[in-house]
Image (cartoon, rainbow, N blue to C red; front, side, top):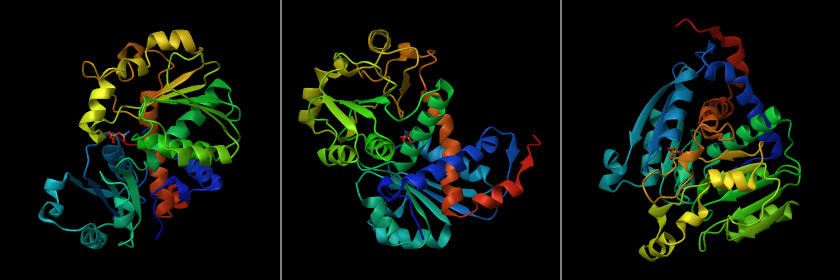
Length: 329
Ligand code: CP
């Protein structure tokens, strides 16, 4: 069976198809219509790392297609705490579920799990590896926002900033963007947290202009998208935490940055969660209420995009429209 483990397996046609299916899911996501197309199907939601959005929105998307969900969170609530392997867990879960979403702190672990099962597996984040469903909803968001603003992806200027080394969402997103017509991509990260060079090489080889800077104080122009990511401190060594503490405020996207460097049609994105603890210096709350802040439009878009992922992996996309009924509640 097919899985969604990395965006590397997706062609431009495949991505465009998924996003078209997502657009057809909007009436369900917006509670105008309902379907029971996945009645009787069971999703296994296996999260071995903290999550709010990915876990709950995959759960909600499956339920809104008529299925039911078994949700397991944390190592202590699975028999991996007793030393059970990924292989055995996968073989067992395959007998219980018709699709599985998995998040795990080790890069490559979700692919290892998927190799042992015959049911579709979706990578909900594997350590610093990839997060393909987040990148798909980010791309869907960019398409929707650009359509509203009368913009095109071709030639767009996209800034990716923050932890580009451990931030798995940007690894998947930049590769998805690279499937489209040439654009300008600027990367800004603190020292030691740069985008892996093999990813940059791939994007450049597909005809895009990629520039790396070490400061948000650079003289940017014509920014269409500012995509900022949380510093993934949980993946740091103690040494890295100390060296980062002194520079963190220089990489904060806030109102002053927007006023100085952006236009009325720049959109600001973040996969969330943003760290709002004192001193965290993540995307600043002083932008709350600014219409350019697209972060909660992103989270809303997670539902139709994740419904589209299930619809295509379980091959029910054409059945859904025939099954649609008006909402009765
Ligand atoms: N964007 C994202 O993956 O959020 P969660 O960690 O809350 O799932």
